[in-house]
Every structure is written in structure tokens, then in C-alpha cells.
Amino acid sequence: IDDLQWSDTATLDLIRSISLDTEIPSLLIVGSYREEEVSDSHLLALHIRELGEQRSDAITTISVKNLSPSIVTSLVAEVLRMEDNEKGVASLAASVYKKTEGNAFFVLMFLRHLYDEELIQYNFGAMAWLWDDSAVSSTMVMQNVATIMVNRLKQFPEGPQNILKVASCLGASFSTSVVAM
Image: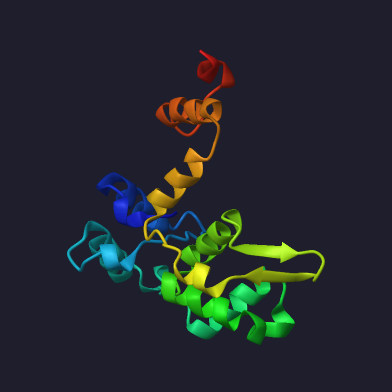
């Protein structure tokens, strides 16, 4: 369950109730939330503490931190299929790390943005990836998932954008006939 920091009381009560139900012998609930958005007095933090007090084996916390510069270098090398030449991507990886601060989601989105903007290109003649370090360094990174997604959606033609606008008002599932209206 993603973004638990936005959960309401009823949702958190349901999760706690299911977690404490001894009639369910084997259950694994994986939840994620943004630590920086959950203070000690946050509703989620209170529920986590209560659940831990009621059943100490019910909670395992794994804190996910930003990637280190060396891991970003490895990730960039792997994305570009240059695992055997990490030194070859060092300048690109350093710029990516500087722009994203090692946030894994932003690393991948920034690489995608660089590719979409043709700032990273594959040269079939040389059979190698090419980029201009100064162009990459001067590229802005958006530190907001919503902004990234909105900008990607703006690249869609007007028709699909309108369909998505209607669909977004209908909920998680809907029939195509409703959207066609």
C-alpha cells in the first residue's frame, strides 16, 4: 500500500484490524510512506506505534534512503548497458546525482527526460551512448512527482488528454462506454 501518510483513520483502523486478526494465519502487508511527511504525532505514526505495542512481531521497518553517488553511477551504467565501463558514465552519473540528490525515482525520471530531450543519444555508427556534459548540467530537474507526470501527460495529443481528464473523474475503474459519452 503506497503513500500511507495520506491514509484516513478508517483505512488505518482496517489495516490494524486485519494485521491483528489471528484467524488469518499468513499475511504480509507491505506499506510505504514518506518519512519526511510523518511526524511523531502524525496519525500514521500513532497507528504504527499502537500496532507495534499490540503485536511486536507485526512491524518491520525498512528505511529507504537516497542512493549514494557510486550506486547512481552503477544505475546509470546499467540503464545505458555500460556496466563494464562505469568510468565511461562517471561525468553523466555525477551530473545526475547532483541534480537528483540520489532520489531513485528522480534518477530514472531525469534519465528518461534527458533521453526524451535527446540530450542522451545512442550513436549506432559508434555503437555508443553520447551526451554533452554541459547540456546535461544545465538541464533543470523537477523535484515533484506531480509536475513530472503533468509534463508527461501534456505531451499526449489533445484527444487522449481529454479522455484521461474524464477518466480521472470516474475512479479506479469504469467502462469505455462511459468515457465515450
